[in-house]
Image (cartoon, rainbow over all chains, first blue to last red; front, side, top):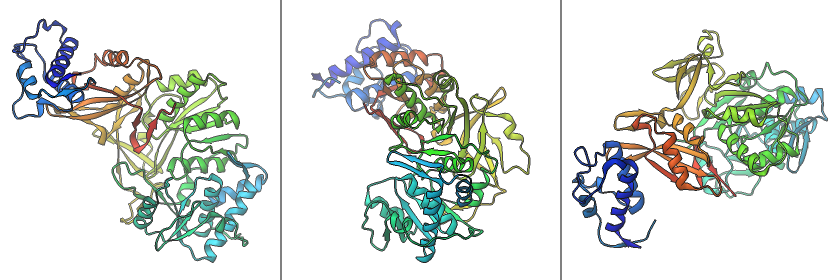
Length: 84
Length: 450
């Protein structure tokens, strides 16, 4: 068990480890795209699907597109969620 | 239909026409039933009716009897839902339904099959010039449509079938499906035997192959893949098939090799057919796809083909008369099939349906080549590739996977990504889900029941 933010962070880090193993250390403020972690549009689309599967909602459907890990975590609340 | 039955009954009245789990029916007995059905339809002034029965011998007697009487039969897909039956009866304006189970349908006369089949009178006349039939589509895109056919056209497609008394054909399709009717007519034209297990799942099909010594079998690629999985898992005797036919879906590339390996003595053919345009005939060289020469059949051909913008088009003179409730179709007009194809060397290969193309950020992705790759991964029993809606790109390529029992799903997911890593980025699966069943094209639901 954990809250949504913790689960979202775990999901994003696990995803980046898989698709961008060369990205190195990720901070909350690391840019997700070109000048940072380097996710392209399809990898970002995949991340949005993974987050939807794991947490039931997807921050990329919000008005403001997340630019950092912190933006993604801000989308999710602090409610406790079960592990998948 | 009736003429095929009469010919085979004259040649061998005691020859077995149909084998079901409960017993056998000879050509002579089947013809007698059909002629009683015809007499009963005429006596009751029934000119069109629906059929809802799972017993193949009953269904065949009703179909053959209707073709002799010139009455329009229409089989409903198997269902126990009375509301669904009522909806079909309303949609196709049937006021007579012949049903093996009691039904309460207001305004509709429900007859048991025995009321027609066990009628005392017999009709021995010749069939009328026009012998209509309705075959329902599978309703992939909504409610089923009624494809109006004529038995004369359907029988014409089997006029070159050679007698083959010893052949025992598995019925892996429902007789309410066009493919099932094609098998039935082929069997009767050959004077062969139809083996019709129930239900028509691969597990029961494999059991019927062994029990009833099936020699010939025609089924969808999905059916064959599950049958191979059953064969591998039970380890029992491999049926001695002489002929394997595939149709109804595009064929995953590895499947032909897997079938050749499992059934080394079987000739492998494929059929391209649909209830709307009939059958293009068999491709018997064991290779995937159609031979390019199908594009050069000329103006006199019963069924001609051409490719327009990657889609197969047909012009058929052995196809449907039209859809129920709509204007008749012109047999000389070309029609789009919805099947996407690609010419590779000397073959026309099927790439999926126009309705299945996935638009990934403006890139059109065909699901079938991806399904081929995913299906070849160890531990994958069945896979379906589809477009999943996505806020970033409109859609992404997604996969539903039925895993082999006991398989490590994390390892399978990683292997799927690896298998697709060299595809163009838009074609790589971005979502992999493990499920107990997958919904295939044509509304078929494939389940792993273990």
